[in-house]
Amino acid sequence: METFANPCLTLLTDSTRYGELDFDLIEGAIEGGVDMIQLREPAFTESKVIKTGNLIREITKNKALFIFNGNPKIAHKINADGVQLPESRIDTVAADIPKGLLIGRSIHSKTTALKSEKAGTDFLIAGTLFKSNSHLEIDPSGLSLISTLCKVLRTPILGIGGINADNAESVIKAGAHGIAVISSIWSASNPKDAAKTLKQKLVVN
Amino acid sequence: METKTINIKINGKNKQINSCMTIAELMTKLDINIKLIAIALNGVVIRRLDLDKVQIYPKDEIEIVRAVGGG
Image (cartoon, rainbow over the protein chains, first blue to last red):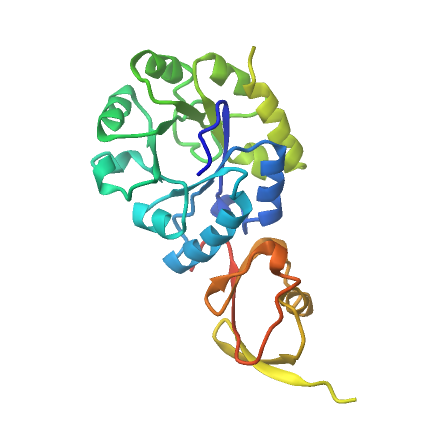
């Protein structure tokens, strides 16, 4: 299993918004510096998740962590390094999850972050930090969510939501271990270069 | 010289193709961009590096999976 990178640049998939997953783009993004690929495709059938997941497992092998955003049993089945659980699955404790899987949880508040830590988690994805194309209806929390969480948690936190090359550094300065992005890479004219630039922004002296 | 053909299944449908083709050659013939799909041969997902090495045999079942939502 790959280790959790610090800083960690995560790329989530979103075929609903950006069309068919481009596996060349995923490979290029990893070459550019992405440390974690999250397959997040709630509209996929289980069969499609398994076929796609097997391919992403092959692409990420020995290069990046592969996390399946969804059912832990399927994450185990596709040999992912871990599973990402939504805030609504806060009651799923670490003991309910197949052994060996890293556990990531998505959270939007201090209350659920503390509950997540209690339930068992290896990392948290916290947001929505900035105005995001994926969640236009949500009022962003701003960086205060990260700085608040860092004061009370020991778990590594990745910021998410509207993060780009202009604000990535501020997320790290607020205390995050990394960032998770979608559009900054999927909609970039050169995704590999976009990943490279974002990664450089995460290395704050 | 007559080209030898074989019978295979693609996404559950019978198909006749020329023999001695690789998966990559078949995808080119079908005008399918391999960067946008996962391909399973008899239930096993083929590694991307192997697409131009794996030969298709008679009765093979190939599944072409477009990685996009909606079934």
